[in-house]
Length: 214
Image (cartoon, rainbow, N blue to C red; front, top):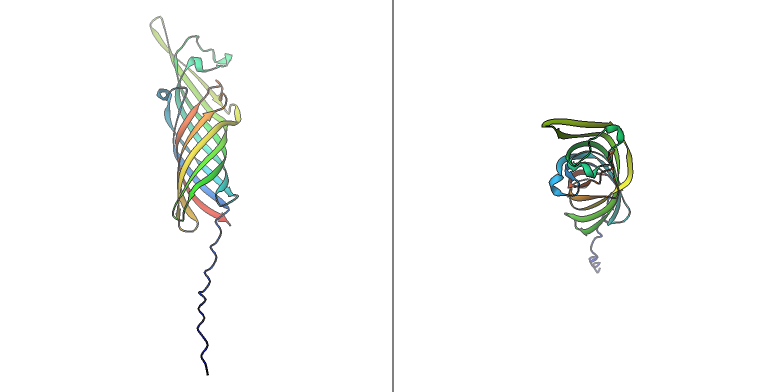
């Protein structure tokens, strides 16, 4: 009896599982905000939640809800101060500290995608909801120095008022978890806050992310 020839067909490998389409993340990182010059910038902190939806293997839509601290210096001429503040006329420096809720919405594109890392770029718009604005300045008259201050709680909202540009690096930690580092630059498209200031920000966001749904 002839023996049957051994089957030389290699066993089929299981198809790779598709990537997670829905990803949630925890985000935190420092940012610096300023008006016109780098010398006016001061450090603040951003933190909050993000949610991503993957359209293709390289393209994602991302939204977030962040709490942001904006600290900076500015000249009095950079502001359109409300009349109720009764600010003194002239040119002087102001110290600002604002708490803002940011709602970013952007598109991310993976430029380099490997099993062990991903390099991406993103472009989007941020909405700013002003929560607590505090401004102060020193005014000298007849040899005496006075401190003038103003505060606005739950002020104006500015929808899609900031252009957000970013690049980043993401590294997987197992099948669901990943970490991400993302330097960014935010460019004002108009004035924000009670003084209609044109505020620029830059920083780095660090995220811990978890895949929910495929």
